[in-house]
Length: 379
Picture 1 (tube, rainbow, N blue to C red):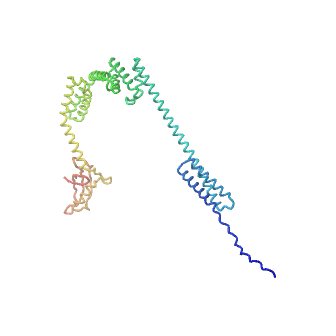
Picture 2 (cartoon, helix red, strand yellow; picture 1 turned 180 degrees about the vertical axis):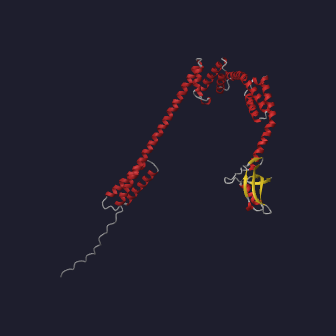
Picture 3 (cartoon, rainbow, N blue to C red; picture 1 turned 60 degrees about the vertical axis):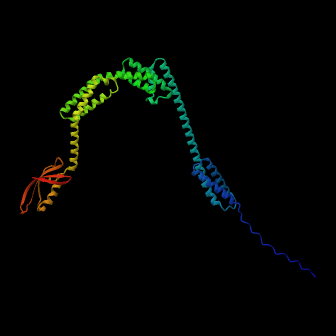
């Protein structure tokens, strides 16, 4: 009797392959690299952005080459975009490098110029000091003048230039070249405010120049006062005032000098004051007349215009149509050109119109116009 075979256990169903998740992490990393590279490009970070872009490009290529990859389309797009970002970032890096190089070159150029300027100032300062010591003030003055204004003279050269201007100023003063001495001594005083010698020399030069100038200016002032008197007698008040203003300005230039204490200066000053007092009422009257004239011009308003068709004036025509017995009977004959008188524009107009009895009569009247309105009528 045969034995029955033991029952076989039921076979288990074949295991299903688990979907691979190995690509999720690389994809996230590659995407992160691309985003960072793109941000670096936008923010113009330069080469660091290019490195991240290369990483994203390499990852995209790796994904594309992997067998059974489901992200090939995305990998192609990522590779193209990463390439663009890489080139853009490299361009930014090159531009940044050029900018930094240009900035460094500019700084170096400025430094070299500053060093050259300092060296030049030191050289000029040494030359000025040497020229002053060797009794050659003119050459030293020429060097100092090359700086332009006194305020532009470097600190190291100020003392030397002050000494040069003082020496040359004294030399010019001794030679009676007062027009040359005064500016030189003024510069010397400006550069050495506490130098008593410079102040004394400048004061002497000004006094001598004042006396010399007054010899020429005094007769000119006297002639100007004579012209002012002639204008005043002719009631030419403004012309007289112009002459007096010129005389006063000339005399004022000598105030503070010894010449201003002289008899001649005081005589001229007194004459100018007396003449000004004499013309003052005339000037005030003239001013009042001008103000009145201005007011009358404003009251007159714009000038009326004669019609190019029949010569009539619109303001007169409008006025007559308002006051006539029969406005429709108005017939213009002639009108003169407007004439300004006081606060009015005056025109003489002749016209025909029906009277109260219906008869048409000729009339001639003077019309006074202000600001576009007839305000008065006279026969």
